[in-house]
Length: 92
Image (cartoon, rainbow, N blue to C red):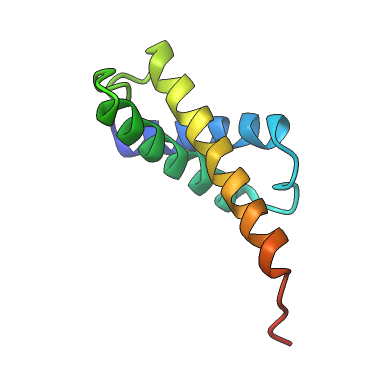
C-alpha cells in the first residue's frame, strides 16, 4: 500500500473511530489521519502477535479496515484514560 493509501486509510479509520469512541472531537484533519495511521499500525501489530496474519497488506481488504479502526479506537481509549488520570495540563 502506498503513502496515499495509508493517508486515506488513516483519515477514514480515524473519522470512524472518533464516531465510535467519544473524546477525539477536538482533533483536526491531520491529527485524525495520524490517529488512523497509528491505529492501523497498532491493529496490524496486535493481529500479527495473535497469529491472525498480516491484516495491513491490502487497501480494500476487510481485515485492514477492521484492524485500523479497532487500533484507532484503542488509541483514543488510551488517551482518554491517561487524560482522566492526570488531567489536562495547559502550558500557558
